[in-house]
Image (cartoon, rainbow, N blue to C red; front, side):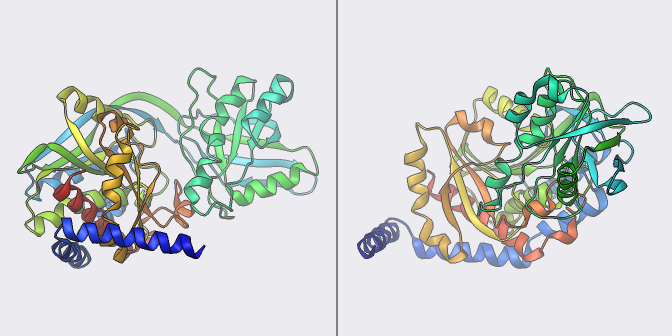
Length: 463
């Protein structure tokens, strides 16, 4: 073990020494320190987020609030003295929630009738007038639905109740291990004749707050699909162990015609390599029940503040630095797909793309992804910057990047995901609690500084 530690330390010293010799490390360290100073004293991400969340609110794609967010952020970018600001059109689904959902356990022999905390899932349909009443069957997986088949599913409400794994240190891994129930579970149940589905909310926390999110039916019959809070999932599961349970559901959600919307874009054009684009972005849409502060208002104002900070510092980039606020990440990725399609048609090259879509919590670093043919060589260059960023508790790792920037992978640049501390993110994700009071000003500003620092290094040294 000592030999391994010694070898690692020697390797680290070698990298640090080489970096110091090949690059003006002191100048870089000073510039990054100045980025942090500016972000923490003259950053604008917090007041921008405050307006986005308190004056506009939840920004579900296709809604008037989403349109207002497009216009507000366009106007803000237009005040920063950028070289270009424009809107990238995309057609988005228009789903509306309707009246407050009702989910009620009816005539239990031990509990009587009791209401559950519930939210309809995006793309769900409502019930017929007067609601529906059916027996509940509990499952832990989609495979279990297949095994039960029509004989065990038809005419029933399927209740998906597999918790997120609390042993996963990074909560996004736990989310990834459970979210198939929400995304694909309702369609799988409808295939066998289920009349509705209930899904345990995607969080490790036990509380009374339901979490919405997208569900996808494709060619399967569309049925009412709702999430219930984790406390209510525990209650229902315990009750099913004792007796048969019937539940009443009433919802009025529906899908309307697709609507024209926009991603919002602003850029500072590079002085030496304008054809090499460094993208910073987040998604402008959010679910409707909260105000989308962490998901993903934080990512949008991070990206906007990168340009504001660099402009305030009179920095003249070598490469084009572009802020993209994507529309419709939550319900189909229309903005990300449309942006990539337009970029490819123009023959653009994204040297790097950085997405902030993991909340406004304390920064921990960046994960990176890229086409296999270029990833190792380019990521090796990024690792050499570690000595400059470790003072700010930032690390680099291999992993995912972001949903909106993933379609750019074919351009063979590096894709980065900004990684703040993840422990509290799913307390708020897709809930009515995702509001401005859940965001810490300093943590948000540190995120903007972290991303700006990485942008600076990529711009100065390339990959």
